[in-house]
Length: 519
Image (cartoon, rainbow, N blue to C red):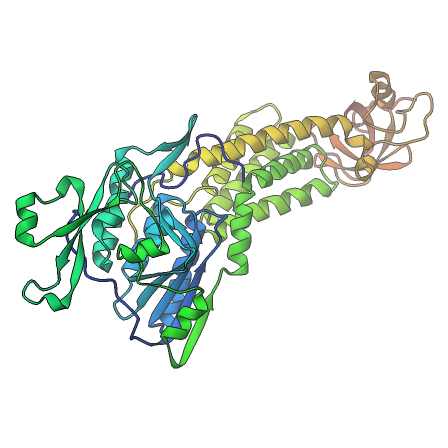
């Protein structure tokens, strides 16, 4: 899908989570080392080429609910992604984070969980990685004239708050998690005895932001030793699997998902693999093609109105708009209102062209309804994230506008080209007035190569084969043709005469009642 230069990428609009940073030693992440599970659901998020967006969020939430109703006591999120939109990532993470305590959650990262995917991973109670896994680099960014740009503090603050919230709730080091978002932080750690009165119990690491690091006197009284820099100032935190293990983010390393499953399956355990449905995959692909569908739909609609009764443009328009609104409906972007508005707009445009030419109001209203319905079906409903804070759709508008501007431009070019050359296409030659090239005829086509050819066809007579309301078919000089009247209705069987030929548009007038029949 083509996006304009100013499209908002990764974390592009804030949702206001509130949480305070705390320092110190985290509780260790829940470990499944000794725990076995009876019902294991696996939710696959491995399409790294696609952003975490509303369609992915809705799919994950559907699969989570399916796993919950199935009675899963463990949900594994098989993650491989470079991230996505802020609202979709946060809404997905909040749903995972708020699952009941009876359902354990594991994020398995075989290769990478970057940006919004790192947020989703930290929402899980445990993170397991392969040796090739990576996690982190979650700063909110925009794309501008200079390329990637750091988002403003209004965006960064709620994203960092979400990382702190998930880290604290699941026992990960809060400063380390926050450093995935904020590059201005330096994160350090100190070694501390687990039990000051019993050295045999070993030591643990305590993590701090450099701006909240204890003084020398405080470190002495707390028994802190062996200071180490975990994340240098000026660098976004991104960790390999072994680094994540060392910094208490990853609970253990497993080469593949199956090896993890072998460790945690109870005897006779049941498994459920939860993938994208066919409808979700198709819908997501079609939403990415919305600019092309818009281009085909507008172009086909134009030719359907200009050459009524032929069937070909009508079918193309029906297919294009059916796919457009069908994909939007599956992704919860569009409902019955958008579809009703669209068809009402088309009807008003038809009324403007054929029934009330020159009046203006129906056409303008119809055009506004059509474009509004198409735009509404291209962006998600505000607050559509189930159970999550309200969602602002502003981050979609630039991308949608770019798609539609491109589609409109392409449609205009295609319409201009086809209007000039459609008579050369074998499929459309039957729409033209053809005949043996001869003096006084239109040299084989209603789309005359010269003005003289068009004028030669004017005056030819025939009979209306159908009622002309105002479009229909008539037999002209022994051949059936698609014609349109000047705006009035003509009954079947009435004699008609060609009064104008413009491109492939043949305009006729009734000659029996008007007293125009010439001897």
